[in-house]
Image (cartoon, rainbow over all chains, first blue to last red; front, side, top):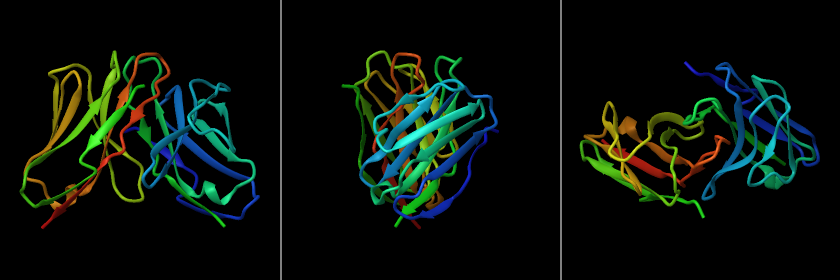
Length: 114
Length: 111
């Protein structure tokens, strides 16, 4: 079974703090993705990576950065957390070498910024 | 612009009352269409992949079908445990692996 794990299920941080969200997958997937999900807005892509040290901006990259030093691990960084970054954060991974490849999601991290 | 639209936004059914969820898309050269189930507070769980018009996939009470412009998720004799949000996503042409997600249909099945 594909397994995608995220470092925390719930996280509470203060405005201005630097926040790290980590994601690990065990399926040797090339692609990894970070989304945020908010009521009424659906899933929005923040960043994705198709290889180690490679990254591309998604639809809403502002205020976020990412790091992929190892194939199995993809980190999302909030340099200076703000209240409008309170959200559910979802990590996903998929094969790149396969033409059609479903994404597998982690359990999510509910981040609250106060 | 590539778009995915799901309808209805919300659906309430009585246990045993069959129905269908719709996912329409405007993507040309579709590589794949995916259905997910999401329970409150959890990540989406992969259900099905459909590749070409006419294809069907089944899993327990769920059956997904695909035409050139839309997909249906049929739920036969649903049970309360089928209550969840169902997401549809399409993979457009290109090699990024990015998916375009619909807004989802929230299904509530009452006993």
